Length: 257
Image (cartoon, rainbow, N blue to C red):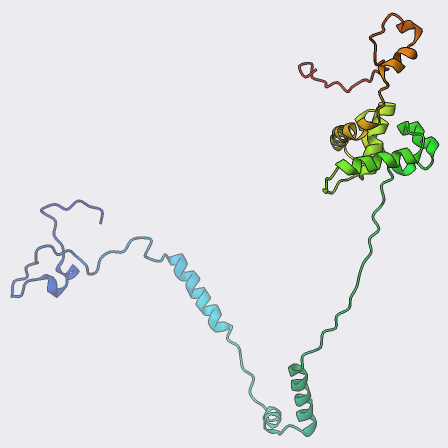
């Protein structure tokens, strides 16, 4: 009950069972017993008057909504008692036969062809030797083919690339001939600038050993016999290299420069 017991508090005997008392005429409680009968209920356990009214309404609606079964007529009894005709039996047997027979599945081979748009590259535009010389500096297609054969002898990469090895050679020659930016060259070949940079660095390292045997160095006597007048006082000169200055792409960050 939520109250602290005192020595003067008394509990009615109706709250105990007969087993809680000692046998005899005088009722005496056993030690350690506690009330278990007719205990007061909490407010949450006692239903309120509103809940009682709601439950009575629901019970009343259930009894009011009972379904009335229509009485059985003589026509219904005749339909149930009549025997099926032969046509009805045949129809039922046909339906059972159709349900048991599994339909045969038919398979048809079908194919779809998808034409993806072809990306036009700079190598596809080079159709004659004049255009080839304008972009790469090579005078004939035979020279391009010989370079391709020389590279194929030392290049054994079997990976799949976006560009063929012929296109990558043309891309490198265009960079060396016209000195276009890698962004422009990447646009002409339909690739990203980062991929264009990777191809340029890769092919530069491959063409160097492939084309080094083509470079001809004459003997010193031949050089002295054909030395220009401006180099008359420099008899120890063996090679005169005509270099071309090429601009490079500088990064925006000054620390990286």
